[in-house]
Length: 231
Image (cartoon, rainbow, N blue to C red; front, side, top):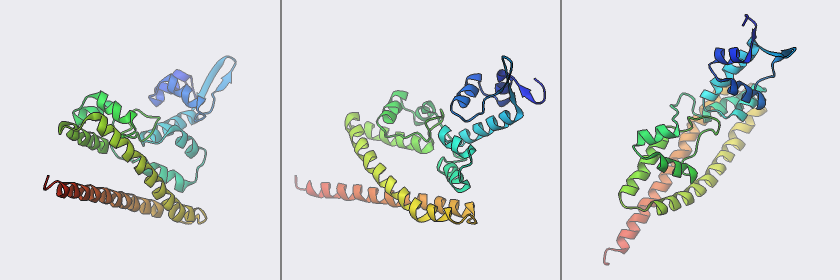
């Protein structure tokens, strides 16, 4: 290896990734092909810089498709929002680590993922979950320990997930229509202001939805108890 050119194994070592990863990124269009000299292929320092940037963005929880668009010159505001949505700085966990921290069998976590009750942050990384997922698994385990059958719990979870997904889509549409899109026509709009709005509105919307659900559960429980007082 000289100061400017790398063989594929040298590039992989310099970027602390595998040769297969380098070739996969090329296949996905994230990394330009190497320069060929006869039958030999050489990569440059630009390839190394790009590869390290890909790894940095991937570490933030972004999908490879999102990374490709950012590297291709996506709108800076949208790129910043993508990073914010991915939970930059938040500790990321693998499925095995979620099971270990929650103190449950890995098979249970795999069942929750398969049923759509635990949603990965990104399909392109091993560490797709957070401490919030650990809390959700513990909550499910508490219901199982209380005697709720797993099949009924999964059925309830599927119905809840479907309803939540529909509401979440509507909430994101509202943000997109009334907050994000108006900024696209104002390039002078600071990215920080939009991120501040997103970081303020996301927990606000989550708190509103959580409050409505918790209040509805309490109300339903009180109604059921009152109905059974004389039984």
